[in-house]
Length: 378
Image 1: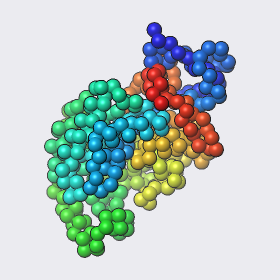
Image 2 (image 1 turned 90 degrees about the vertical axis):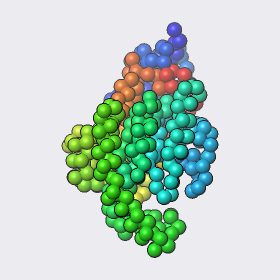
Image 3 (image 1 turned 60 degrees about the vertical axis):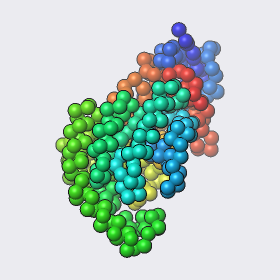
Image 4 (image 1 turned 90 degrees about the horizontal axis):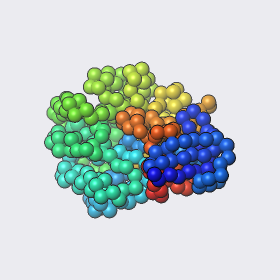
């Protein structure tokens, strides 16, 4: 039996922080004790927390497509992403891979094959530091989203799908004026070109979104694949999600939608960068306000991996009555449970020894060591 022990740590449990030690055997936590211990690796008073669980990060895609029109080698992109993920204390990651082509990415199916193929290879060959799963981001207005969903939904590593519609005038960008302000300079198009682009996107929405959603929802139910909704904005959006059997409401944009999702028993996921910055980058509701209202269950690093750990340590400073164990649950236990991964996400006997050593320096949580199933990986 492979045994190891840590001592002199501030161990963050589900409801408290204790000063003590922790023992492991064969990658599983076997004992937690308070008070001093003589044996084991001395953590010098640092925090010992569960490995973080990330359900929705677009970061792999940003490594694969670092500039518009530039596509990197998929395996190299995954390696760079994996190193940054594990270095941020994330031991389980659901890599969000967008499916569904549009004029900016007309051959998306080819790119999906490369990215999911790299993940499958990395998992099979055992060189990934974090445990990687695939989260299919289903762009409903895309003409080929169903074909791409069918090609990847049954893979062993596909564990979550989200239904989303980024059509101008829908959900996140209900206001076309807000959309134009956000994207006009970013897209580098004239006003006439932008107007033509908006007309084409809205026509695709009218033609494809509803039937594509119906198909993907039905197939996900057949496959037992958990579903998330995305950018719920109104009560009707939440009611649609509940009727479709979604389990997670990702990035609700209004208090009305978040409250309705909470009342319906959906797990509410928001972006950790929203917490760190103190506001949404697109002008929607503040994630910290949802924490204050006790309406937030899960944080996602979204586009900045380290934001997940940073947000968990920032929240107790900003929200009265919120202790560190409760804040850390939004990035460990809660996402693990929402994804059906009951073997991880907390420090308790019988749970996986996915662990992170953290020291707070100048208010910033610094990762000093990461273990996955008891094996040091960073």
